[in-house]
Image (tube, rainbow, N blue to C red):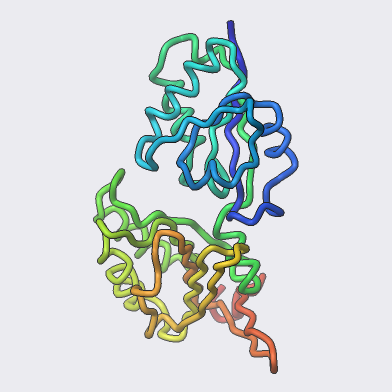
Length: 254
């Protein structure tokens, strides 16, 4: 008997930024698997059950959810942001690829959400207005030398770069090293946007030039956007500055 598995994102944390599709999946599901703080964002009924696990137990969580769905339950796997961006959708797909045949028969629905870099970008202006990429600074699943190589190539290629998982207690130094590497390839005035908890009551948005970017103000709830050489700042009297990357390249750089 095959049930249903929904993989959803709660968005950046503001309830208004959770999509109607995701809310409908929450209404339909009976069991919810996820990291505790993400499950806490949902308003569940008394008949809906939570299955909480640590944030580093993605594959175990995916397997448990798939097993329950394969037994006929309507299950929801919950991520923050968008479930397909450094989140649970990839873990569910990996579990299906390597798991029993019954998991491939599960009715799987992955629903898009609002990921952190989009929320931070909207707060700052339009820094993602031209080509951009997203890189996780966590070296839990890939070695640091690969991260360094990707950062260097992205900067040389002119991409705006969004950093996910920029810093943690176990990884206090990577963000500072990333800034140091980028300073060798980008102008000192390149805007760096620190977006913490975008859209939530404790939101904090700060913009610093790359030459002065301070890694100590970031934590794991912070998404960081590094501008390209094209990214600009528009000052506005009495209002916050706008950071944006033009839709066109400067004439001499084409």
